[in-house]
Image 1 (tube, rainbow, N blue to C red):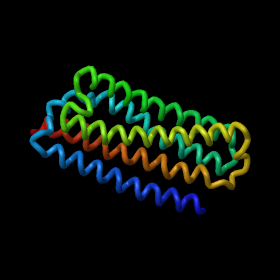
Image 2 (cartoon, helix red, strand yellow; image 1 turned 180 degrees about the horizontal axis):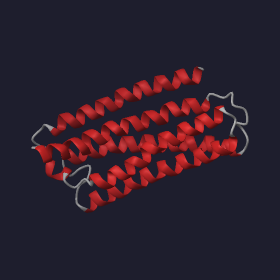
Image 3 (cartoon, helix red, strand yellow; image 1 turned 120 degrees about the horizontal axis):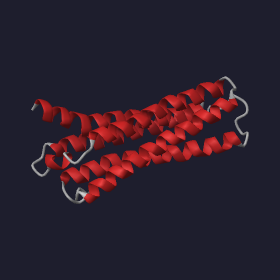
Image 4 (tube, rainbow, N blue to C red; image 1 turned 30 degrees about the vertical axis):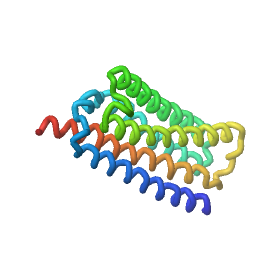
Length: 187
């Protein structure tokens, strides 16, 4: 029970951190130095695809949690592996987007847009990576038989963090990708 309280406190502080980053991104987007033309380099279609993989990973982790509670260890392992694959696909997609943007001369130092975009999405990517490290550890421990009884709270605790990371990306995707695209269409 204590670990769930601790992760809720961590998620609470991280939520404040991401709220500050999102507010900074929105604030900077209103300043004259923010180049909306650089936002045109963002590929909303491919980002939506790799975002769907991340959002799906919340479902697969939830399924892992449910199978753990039911003592279905084989299914638990499968859902954990699928969660890892989905999270890795998201990071691979983000890495490809970064590489393409850098080739198109959009970087963290190229403009206010580049700085705020790479800071916000990069910190989120770092949180996804940290989550994948933890999920990899509990997956390895599961395969070694450490969670053969459904009394541990570790999956619920990790789930709180993983679902938080997905929810944050929903807001980031909406603010960075969808709203400017929608504004362009209706503007």
